[in-house]
Amino acid sequence: MTPVRVGDPAPDVTLLDASGAEARLGALLRGEATVVIFLRHLA
Amino acid sequence: MSKRGAELPGRVIVVSFARPGRLAAYARELDLDLDLPLYSDPDRELYGALGFGRASVARAWLHPRVWVRYARLLARGRRLHRPEQDTLQLGGDAVFDSDTRLRWLYWSRGPEDRPSVDELIDALSRAAAPPA
Image (cartoon, rainbow over all chains, first blue to last red; front, side, top):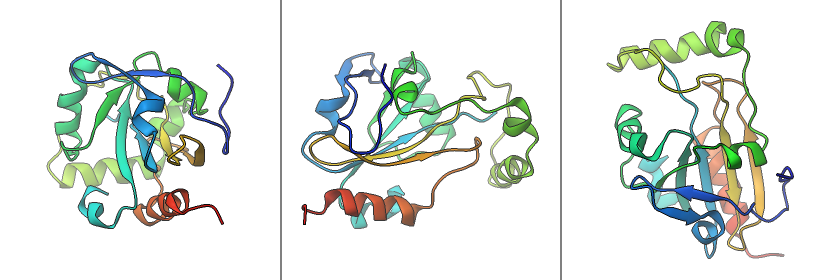
Protein backbone atom coordinates (compact mmCIF):
# COMPACT_ATOMS: atom_id res chain seq x y z
CA MET A 1 0.00 0.00 0.00
CA THR A 2 1.26 3.49 -0.88
CA PRO A 3 2.28 5.43 2.22
CA VAL A 4 -0.22 8.11 3.20
CA ARG A 5 1.07 11.63 3.73
CA VAL A 6 -0.52 14.66 5.32
CA GLY A 7 -3.02 16.09 2.82
CA ASP A 8 -3.78 12.70 1.26
CA PRO A 9 -7.18 11.00 1.49
CA ALA A 10 -7.53 8.25 4.06
CA PRO A 11 -6.46 4.86 2.70
CA ASP A 12 -9.13 2.43 1.60
CA VAL A 13 -8.83 0.05 4.54
CA THR A 14 -11.38 -2.17 6.26
CA LEU A 15 -11.31 -2.45 10.04
CA LEU A 16 -13.15 -4.87 12.30
CA ASP A 17 -15.22 -4.05 15.36
CA ALA A 18 -15.26 -6.19 18.50
CA SER A 19 -17.87 -8.51 17.00
CA GLY A 20 -15.78 -9.01 13.86
CA ALA A 21 -18.06 -6.88 11.68
CA GLU A 22 -16.28 -4.96 8.93
CA ALA A 23 -16.16 -1.17 8.84
CA ARG A 24 -14.63 0.91 6.04
CA LEU A 25 -12.27 3.55 7.37
CA GLY A 26 -13.64 6.21 5.04
CA ALA A 27 -17.15 5.66 6.34
CA LEU A 28 -15.94 5.96 9.94
CA LEU A 29 -14.19 9.26 9.24
CA ARG A 30 -16.56 11.05 6.91
CA GLY A 31 -18.60 14.00 8.13
CA GLU A 32 -16.64 15.10 11.19
CA ALA A 33 -13.01 15.77 12.08
CA THR A 34 -11.65 12.69 13.81
CA VAL A 35 -8.60 11.79 15.86
CA VAL A 36 -7.58 8.15 15.51
CA ILE A 37 -5.50 6.77 18.36
CA PHE A 38 -3.37 3.77 17.38
CA LEU A 39 -2.58 1.61 20.38
CA ARG A 40 0.85 0.33 21.29
CA HIS A 41 0.85 -2.75 23.47
CA LEU A 42 2.73 -2.97 26.73
CA ALA A 43 3.34 -5.96 28.96
CA MET B 1 -8.58 12.48 26.43
CA SER B 2 -12.02 11.07 27.13
CA LYS B 3 -12.22 13.19 30.27
CA ARG B 4 -12.02 16.27 28.04
CA GLY B 5 -14.66 15.04 25.61
CA ALA B 6 -16.79 18.14 25.99
CA GLU B 7 -13.92 20.28 24.65
CA LEU B 8 -13.37 18.18 21.55
CA PRO B 9 -14.26 19.73 18.20
CA GLY B 10 -14.59 16.26 16.67
CA ARG B 11 -14.72 12.60 17.54
CA VAL B 12 -12.22 10.02 18.73
CA ILE B 13 -11.81 6.43 17.58
CA VAL B 14 -9.25 3.90 18.78
CA VAL B 15 -7.51 1.28 16.63
CA SER B 16 -5.53 -1.72 17.83
CA PHE B 17 -3.88 -4.56 15.96
CA ALA B 18 -5.27 -7.03 18.51
CA ARG B 19 -7.81 -9.51 17.17
CA PRO B 20 -11.44 -8.35 17.45
CA GLY B 21 -12.16 -10.82 20.24
CA ARG B 22 -9.46 -9.22 22.41
CA LEU B 23 -10.54 -5.60 21.97
CA ALA B 24 -12.86 -5.40 24.96
CA ALA B 25 -10.27 -6.98 27.26
CA TYR B 26 -7.62 -4.52 26.11
CA ALA B 27 -9.95 -1.61 26.63
CA ARG B 28 -10.44 -2.73 30.24
CA GLU B 29 -6.72 -3.35 30.80
CA LEU B 30 -5.80 0.04 29.42
CA ASP B 31 -8.58 1.74 31.36
CA LEU B 32 -9.96 3.16 28.12
CA ASP B 33 -13.29 4.86 28.01
CA LEU B 34 -15.50 1.98 26.89
CA ASP B 35 -17.75 4.41 25.05
CA LEU B 36 -14.99 5.16 22.55
CA PRO B 37 -15.39 3.27 19.27
CA LEU B 38 -12.69 0.60 19.18
CA TYR B 39 -11.59 -1.19 16.00
CA SER B 40 -9.14 -3.88 15.05
CA ASP B 41 -6.58 -3.69 12.24
CA PRO B 42 -5.32 -7.28 12.66
CA ASP B 43 -3.21 -7.32 9.50
CA ARG B 44 -1.78 -3.87 10.38
CA GLU B 45 -2.70 -2.55 6.97
CA LEU B 46 -3.55 0.89 8.33
CA TYR B 47 -0.59 0.91 10.71
CA GLY B 48 1.61 0.27 7.68
CA ALA B 49 -0.07 2.83 5.44
CA LEU B 50 0.53 5.54 8.04
CA GLY B 51 4.15 4.51 8.51
CA PHE B 52 3.99 3.24 12.07
CA GLY B 53 7.18 1.22 12.31
CA ARG B 54 8.72 -1.15 14.79
CA ALA B 55 10.89 -0.34 17.76
CA SER B 56 14.12 -2.14 18.50
CA VAL B 57 14.09 -4.47 21.51
CA ALA B 58 16.34 -2.00 23.33
CA ARG B 59 13.99 0.94 22.63
CA ALA B 60 10.86 -1.01 23.55
CA TRP B 61 12.16 -2.59 26.73
CA LEU B 62 15.30 -0.90 28.01
CA HIS B 63 14.80 2.82 27.45
CA PRO B 64 14.47 4.75 30.74
CA ARG B 65 11.24 6.42 29.62
CA VAL B 66 9.66 2.99 29.11
CA TRP B 67 10.51 2.04 32.69
CA VAL B 68 9.08 5.32 33.97
CA ARG B 69 5.87 4.42 32.12
CA TYR B 70 5.79 0.95 33.65
CA ALA B 71 6.46 2.38 37.10
CA ARG B 72 3.48 4.72 36.75
CA LEU B 73 1.26 1.86 35.61
CA LEU B 74 2.34 -0.29 38.56
CA ALA B 75 1.70 2.60 40.93
CA ARG B 76 -1.85 2.77 39.57
CA GLY B 77 -2.35 -0.93 40.31
CA ARG B 78 -1.64 -2.37 36.88
CA ARG B 79 -0.16 -5.87 36.96
CA LEU B 80 2.41 -6.75 34.35
CA HIS B 81 1.96 -9.99 32.44
CA ARG B 82 3.61 -11.91 29.67
CA PRO B 83 2.95 -9.91 26.48
CA GLU B 84 0.33 -11.45 24.23
CA GLN B 85 0.81 -8.90 21.48
CA ASP B 86 3.78 -7.62 19.53
CA THR B 87 5.32 -5.10 21.91
CA LEU B 88 7.73 -3.86 19.22
CA GLN B 89 4.95 -2.54 16.99
CA LEU B 90 4.79 1.22 17.32
CA GLY B 91 1.62 3.26 17.07
CA GLY B 92 0.76 6.89 16.79
CA ASP B 93 -2.07 9.33 16.36
CA ALA B 94 -3.71 10.65 13.21
CA VAL B 95 -6.20 13.45 12.64
CA PHE B 96 -8.49 13.44 9.60
CA ASP B 97 -10.84 16.18 8.46
CA SER B 98 -14.51 15.68 7.62
CA ASP B 99 -13.60 14.86 4.00
CA THR B 100 -11.35 12.06 5.29
CA ARG B 101 -8.08 13.81 4.41
CA LEU B 102 -5.16 13.22 6.73
CA ARG B 103 -4.36 16.55 8.43
CA TRP B 104 -1.90 15.65 11.17
CA LEU B 105 0.18 12.62 12.08
CA TYR B 106 2.31 11.67 15.07
CA TRP B 107 4.63 8.67 14.97
CA SER B 108 5.50 7.22 18.37
CA ARG B 109 9.22 6.78 18.94
CA GLY B 110 8.66 4.16 21.63
CA PRO B 111 5.78 2.34 23.31
CA GLU B 112 5.46 5.06 25.96
CA ASP B 113 5.69 8.00 23.56
CA ARG B 114 2.44 9.89 22.99
CA PRO B 115 1.54 13.45 22.04
CA SER B 116 -0.03 15.54 24.75
CA VAL B 117 -3.80 15.85 24.93
CA ASP B 118 -3.38 19.56 24.17
CA GLU B 119 -1.50 18.73 20.95
CA LEU B 120 -4.28 16.34 19.89
CA ILE B 121 -7.01 18.85 20.63
CA ASP B 122 -5.10 21.56 18.75
CA ALA B 123 -4.67 19.30 15.69
CA LEU B 124 -8.32 18.30 15.82
CA SER B 125 -9.40 21.94 16.10
CA ARG B 126 -7.38 22.88 13.01
CA ALA B 127 -8.84 19.93 11.06
CA ALA B 128 -12.36 20.92 12.09
CA ALA B 129 -11.94 24.59 11.16
CA PRO B 130 -13.49 25.64 7.85
CA PRO B 131 -10.94 26.43 5.08
CA ALA B 132 -9.77 30.04 5.11
